[in-house]
Amino acid sequence: MSEYVISGGFCDLHRIAVGGVVTCFRVMRQTETDSKKEVYKRFCSELSIWHQLKHPNILPLIGATMEIFPGRFCFLLPWLSHGSIVRFIKTHPEHDKYLAISQIADGLDYLHNLDPPVWHKDIKGENVLVNDDLVCMITDFDLSWILEEQRSMTRGLATLYWSPPEILSDSPLDEDSRPRDVFSFGCTIYEILVGQVPKYIWWTVMKIQPLVLPPPRSPDWEPEEQQLWQMAERCLQVLPENRPLIADIKNEIISLRS
Image (tube, rainbow, N blue to C red; front, top):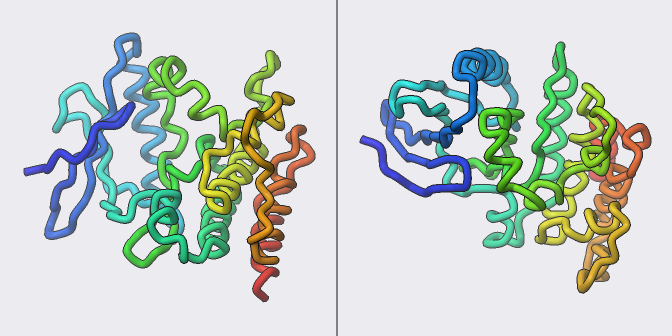
């Protein structure tokens, strides 16, 4: 028997024990306009990729089905009771922020260096979970197409705050989404350091005058945190070609404590 846990904007979560291990069923909401045959085909293709990902900082996909909840995509994932990194840090402000940022960079670097590479396209604090060993694990890969119509109508600024300016351009997006992931990673560094949704970044990049938000630098930051923010600033360059590769950022993060 599964235990209903919470209803989110685009899915319902059910906690269930499988073989004595607590797992999570993430049941996606249905759309009314999907071509079921094409969506199912892409669903299987994307899940095949996710299932093959093996890295300490990538949340493993245990399985998927449309049988338990008929007509709804259902993902079987490990249950991580600590939740997202941003929620965890709010209740555990003493947690090593450098370590969290380093682990996220490791996971992204792994994805970007696969052959073929995997783009995440939705990096943000809520999509980084913390396991029982306090290790950050990236989840929710580019499966937004499952609910594209719903998401486009309801997510609004909630996702734009982590998105680079080129997504608002009339020009088609480059197929290489590494710069997009790097920008979102910079926003995630902001989230972890400041503890806030990166509205300041979005308003600044889009040349919209912030109303009440202060600049993110804090006089209370340690030198290491100042250096991490400087890295974030490089990730947040307006032009995609000016953003560093995540591999370079990863190596720079390592050098801070070497």
